[in-house]
Image (cartoon, rainbow, N blue to C red; front, top):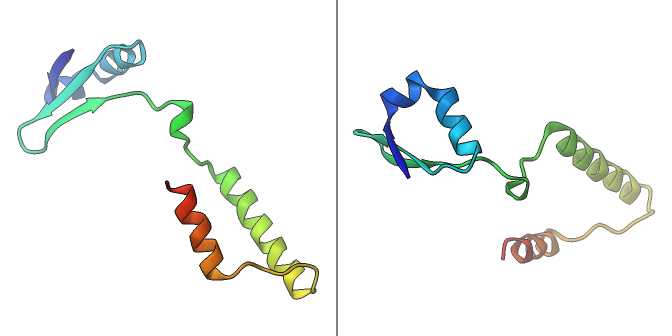
Length: 89
């Protein structure tokens, strides 16, 4: 494990990010803010992009339209919250 200062990191960001990307453990040490471990973001960390959010919003809007046309029955707010609780476990 390599421990570096914030000054050293700022001066050599590309070098250290490449090292982390290649599996090296690097800790960034700051006098004021404490220490931070640098890690690459992986597929399973899932970053939602704008396109995915737009697709979700369009789907939700279509559900509201279908409900207003009497095609579907929407879930209650309580049922939606229960689903969120199950997903976060």
